[in-house]
Length: 203
Image 1 (tube, one colour):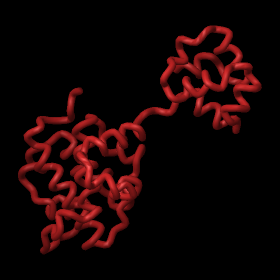
Image 2: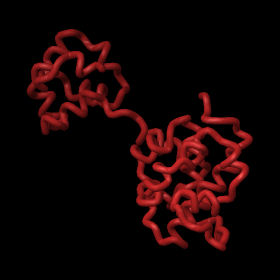
Image 3: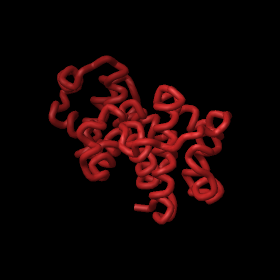
Image 4: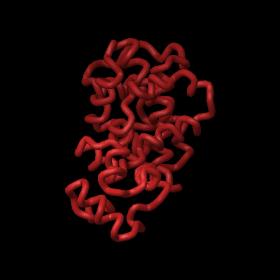
């Protein structure tokens, strides 16, 4: 897997993102998802995604937070290094590096409040357990599932209406079987039942 930047910068950036989240929530009293949106809309976000040394090495977490919030730096450093909010930043920065995806893509798939909700028990585990969790959120929804849900059909209802086995539909939606390799008659039946094209099912 190709990561976002050289690993030598990872620990530094993790500490700064973690500190920013902790200070924003605990000192500035900003709700964690609201701060995440402030972060995403700032130049700090893109700079840290690419380990820009001006930001990653040249500025403290307080200075970065001040840039994001457009105010004066706080006269305080992170106090605990162990708060749930600090952990959210730690996991988020690692995920951005590990998956080589923009912070926006990760937060859109798994909001910071959702990450925070997994503090127990994940903060006690190896960080790769958190990456496995985030990977599930990042996994794109199968077109079949998306279209089925838009038609307000359960898997069982779709199976009955299309004469495609329920087990097969579940396998397609879970990604354990590639729907693009399904028999033409199966694809046709699903498309007819869902009032869509075969191309929409296998995109």
